[in-house]
Length: 423
Ligand SMILES: Cc1cc2nc3c(=O)[nH]c(=O)nc-3n(C[C@H](O)[C@H](O)[C@H](O)COP(=O)(O)OP(=O)(O)OC[C@H]3O[C@@H](n4cnc5c(N)ncnc54)[C@H](O)[C@@H]3O)c2cc1C
Image (cartoon, rainbow, N blue to C red; front, top):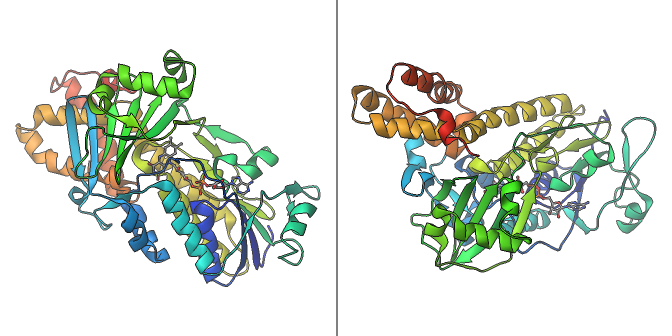
């Protein structure tokens, strides 16, 4: 690994790239970000978790984010179209704030971009050319790029950070092995107006007959996304718009909440997003944000993990003359692994089974004893805190695992967990 880093080139001006650029710039590094100014009409990543709030405060942007977002006091989960379980974040009683925001993503990204500009980070509107150099995995900026930036680094930068999101620029160039998630869903989403109102502005997550859906209340519109198996989706039309519109009309839950609605935007499609690079650093490069790995949209962990990774990387790069990237990779991988376990409780049906068992048993002695405790730790899944509190993790593991199995064995509930898995 290259030591003694003074200059850093960051590919990608999204949240992870801009947050990292700001943090490194504050520590005195010479930083340049390569970005693409043209943005899609709508971008996923609109629901934040409370665990992100302390980082927004440290960056100094919470007030600005608040000014154009909706205040998110909790999460509501629907097992079917009529059964809802709401968890205000205050039930979590943890050490993190008990709220978050639902953000219009284009504005959120601009806030982070403007912050970096204000603080003196140099931006270049240019798709950086990256090339291999030497025999190993060393990389360099191509001649054309060096020329474009007017030799800003006075030669090559000491470190190249890939924050290019799902473009995964460096992983693709170096053919880095990738771990693919087990879900092969397609996500389609749009912004709608005139739909069923959501108040307070919780995120609503719906288990559907096939797949699941989100409803995220933004100022004056609602983001509605469906996450479904592509084979099933194909039967709803030949374009993404047809498939989205027809699916909304045909699915009983979505019909209930969107039948009066109209699309205010086009439909955006995301697929093959469950990817984790198995190597996150090399001789003079490192991966950040989604470019390193993304798990799944459920539980809205993406932006939190992307920005947390930037904080972690800024600390490691700034930690003297010999940045410990192996430590960075270890921490990133561990974090993704723990989130994955929580995500699995959603797809396996265990989380929904727990809700059902809770409803059935609320009036029994065991229900009264365990109910509030379960509610507290379940809420921490939606706030992001469950991942970091060992007790919450172990307790949730128990209640969504052994406890359900034992209750079934002794006849305290009769449903098979698989009845509620996400197909
Ligand atoms: C269906 C779905 C729903 C999601 N919902 C949520 C949610 O509700 N909440 C949440 O927190 N997260 C959510 N996410 C995840 C979230 O969108 C990402 O985790 C987040 O955007 C990662 O930020 P990033 O900066 O790493 O990457 P990005 O946001 O993708 O930013 C990368 C930037 O790099 C630029 N770029 C790419 N290539 C180049 C290049 N060669 N040169 C210069 N620039 C380049 C791109 O234009 C882009 O601006 C969701 C993801 C999916 C797939």
